[in-house]
Image (cartoon, rainbow, N blue to C red; front, top):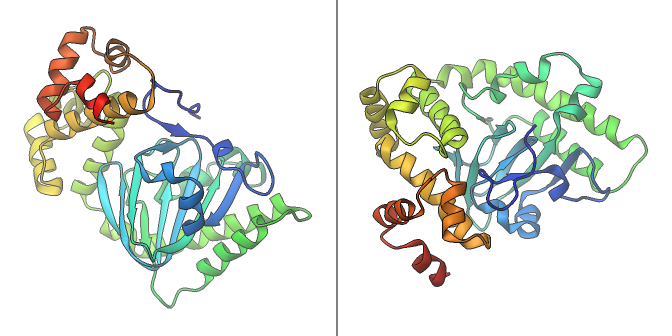
Length: 291
């Protein structure tokens, strides 16, 4: 697993220890979404995790972006994120639901083998969301049990929590096989793969050709794909990812401009300044002074 990101090391990766519950440093966590976003407001900005995540929406609406692709949030939405996936959301004030976190080690302690990694919703080539029908009550009930179990210390809490989690994932896999797999188009798969590669390599790869080669497609195909699905070129998405990280470092670290340039893979600080100005309309120093 990836370590927690320190200022200046991309991408920002949050660890389970960042989300304390009734029991400190448990390898699992569950809370109501509306309480979670108040306690930890930084989760509204793009970030990744070093653990697995479930997001279940019971009320409200919004948008959830996972590795470049934006999905609708609505009641019955169940999202699955694996470690390292970058995501952020925009929630309406009335949005309600639950978040569930767990480490791979926690799950594998009771359920060893490849089962966790074989679930289709944790594979970046498949959609990370299920839209469950209003008549579905089993999974919602299990998630509510997870929340009740985690709310206060109980005997054998970890074992009970793990059992509910296992049932939740297994039942979700049934629904996924029946519905979501049929919705996984090649274009969406390639965009998700591009997003995952971009989050991994944006410090060293800045050309469309680099990512096209990793995806085994032509640069023209990747650009056309991004225009069709996201209404942006692949180049625009690459530059956005670099400048987003630059803004984060300039806003939330004490690094000098030259140090920020180095962290982003620029050998020449003056070139970084020109690059930042070209794609943001301002210099790094001016951006920092505006904060």
